[in-house]
Image 1 (cartoon, rainbow, N blue to C red):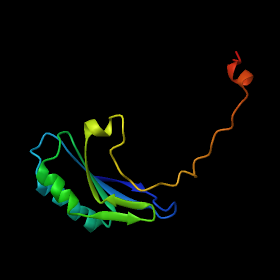
Image 2: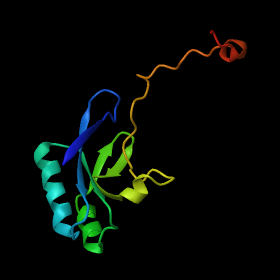
Image 3: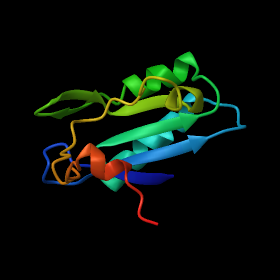
Image 4: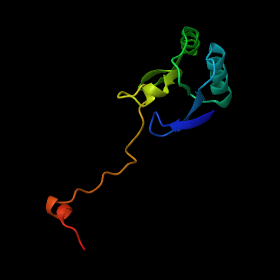
Length: 119
């Protein structure tokens, strides 16, 4: 398992645990293990990433974990995503809003400056 971090309020950083499974027989116990790890680590959410679509039991187990509630809405605490979905045209992860104001916009240069090459 690994983790990444989100900033749902733009201030406090929150942990999201990621469990990656592939080539194994998937079962609800694997999702339950992720739920336990999320709770033990004090993470707010967990993502179960797999090569194969989840079983009905896995989806039920993930739903039993409830939701992570923020000022920006509620998000499934445990989300199951296939690699195909992750790299597909739409983002399958439902994560809280993140503050992107820390990124500065590049200064726009006039078109004539952009087309000149200094050799």
